[in-house]
Amino acid sequence: MNRQVSQVLTGTTTDAVSSTRVWRRVVAVATAAALTAVAAKIAVPLPGIPVPFTLQPVAVLLAGALLGASGGLRSQSIYLAAGMAGLPVFAAGGGLAYLLGPTGGYLLAFPVAAWLAGAFADQSRGAASIALGAVVGLAAIHLGGIAWLAAISGREAAAAVGLAPFFVGDLLKVALVTVIGAGFGGRVRGWIG
Image (cartoon, rainbow, N blue to C red; front, side, top):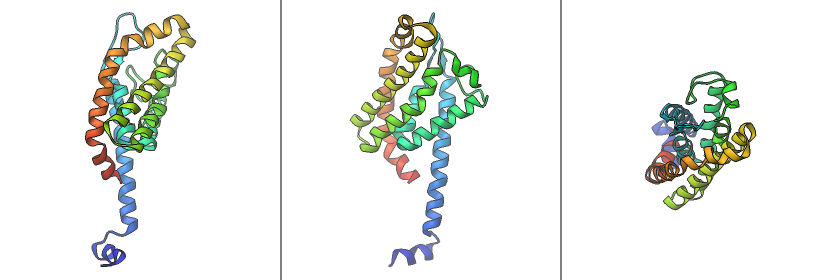
């Protein structure tokens, strides 16, 4: 049977299919932004370190791995916009002034990190590509964070307090993103179209 005739008979015209895909993408992007906000609240303060250990990088990198480069970028841009607008989505609150604090550089790197993780996942949904994307995305987060810490507190302390304490946790985050991304990436992308 002709595809167009089949769509008319079943009520699934191209416009309806496109509309459904758009709404699924909107829901997926909004959900990823919300999950980043929830992950921010799972924070463990580290003694003497101005940056807490959070699960935000997992949510950021998964946004890219599951939604692709553009979906990941959009989700984290929405997350940042919500926080800058004053919604308490960051680890300890919200507002534009929050980005001037010690975690501002990390937060501002989230859209880039999600895009990078998604760009690797767009090339291949295999575990190796997702893991490499997660590592590159995490490096972008740390680069933004350390650069900002160096600007506000000096170079000497930036790497010591902005990178070293997170190394082991980062390895676990990459492993978690790889397992979830490789296991569910195809399903999520199939669902959103």
